[in-house]
Length: 185
Image 1 (cartoon, one colour):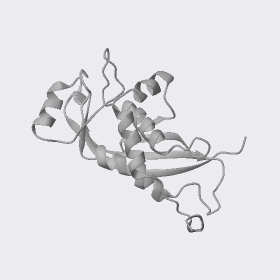
Image 2 (cartoon, rainbow, N blue to C red; image 1 turned 90 degrees about the vertical axis):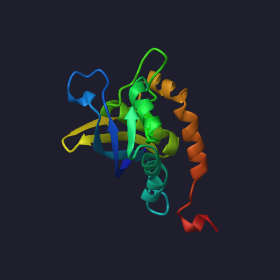
Image 3 (cartoon, rainbow, N blue to C red; image 1 turned 120 degrees about the vertical axis):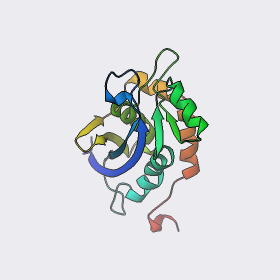
Image 4 (tube, rainbow, N blue to C red; image 1 turned 60 degrees about the vertical axis):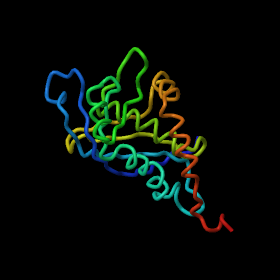
């Protein structure tokens, strides 16, 4: 097995949320400036001298986060009052997808990181070359979670959710860009 190296891309987004049924202050509507680190592994550098241009991570993965999560309210799909309010005022809304007909999913840092792991893996993983290794998601400057993968059940749940075909469509729409000019002639 070849040595695996890592590359990391950082970014941030602002979003609101609340934790349904919590007994303390996080049950209130509030928001955070979330910071994230996307860590990828790769076996070796391409001839041009890097594994993947950071611009490509920004163009696809970070742009999805910007388009969908930035300045959105991230909600538990069972939080009907908030969902109705967001629809009524035409506010940007993202519903958690780690759910089935018997459960719900609060938008905690842990659950958001799990969904982001799935999203970024779907958008950028190259089976034999580049692979998302870890997401670190900061909810505040002093609190963060690391997600290093998903359980088989979570992966299956997300691949059968409404999110998955949207990600596949987004990936196709973004296409791929060859950054090495020697390979485009």
